[in-house]
Image (cartoon, rainbow, N blue to C red; front, side, top):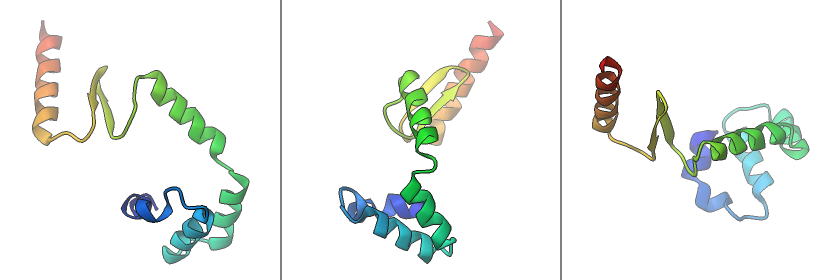
Length: 96
């Protein structure tokens, strides 16, 4: 579902028929359409989603992806080399 939401965000973002669109995505993926629609309509996981959002904001995260390596914050999509450098830096720091 995450992939479909990301790829198709121009279709659903700001669309007043968002629930219909999401239900169609669920059906196209072979999910239990009735269960999905009920969950979406009842906002079953809304409290958990907002709790996660608030936690991220509390850590200073304003977008995705976001990474923490032993408390070292990396924001946004980063190349592999950035992670290598961050890990090497943290390992050197730990040895001191």
